[in-house]
Length: 261
Image 1 (cartoon, rainbow, N blue to C red):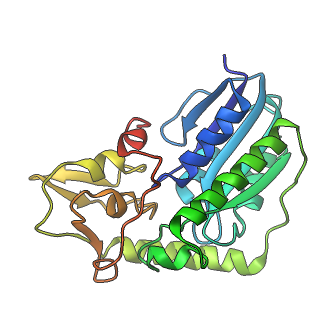
Image 2 (image 1 turned 45 degrees about the vertical axis):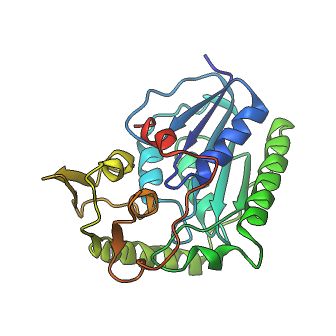
């Protein structure tokens, strides 16, 4: 059995890149996607959770996975959480801490990595560079990830703050907004029926019908994987995204996310 384990959720690769880098620094670490129903192990030295911030909180799909994951209070000696975000991690870490506490686990360390935002429905990718170029933003994210990995290696303690009411309100409104936006997803005539969107979707919200993707309007995570990874840029959200640049983490390939299913 591996000494360490990291559970991760990723749509366009930012969180998978962070999880991979931390795993490489720790060594002897298993990476498990927050999908399906894996059987958790016990006796880990370190257990981590790496995921993005959506609407100032945890992605609902990641939270649901973790809530359903049976974890014993003594399954790991050290538990950490790392959130990738465009600006602020909001209540993501306090939410993680609450879920873990209900399982008898403490969140020993929680931190965030600011990186390129992928929510193309709300803003162009360029607006998330924080007055830096794409390369500089990703370089700064890698540097922060390396610092976090070193702190985790040394067993640093950094508990999560308490939930903040404005973030909680935004989380509720944001997830309602997600449902509304997903119903505006559309597929153009440029679609070649490659099925990549359906294969990537972490919540199986897309099925192929007559060679075209159909959105099930069931449990969309708004991870933007379908829009951002489409090789023909044939998937859009209404008229909001048609002229906006697509983004995927340059060190992550589509197959890296497909194989996690």
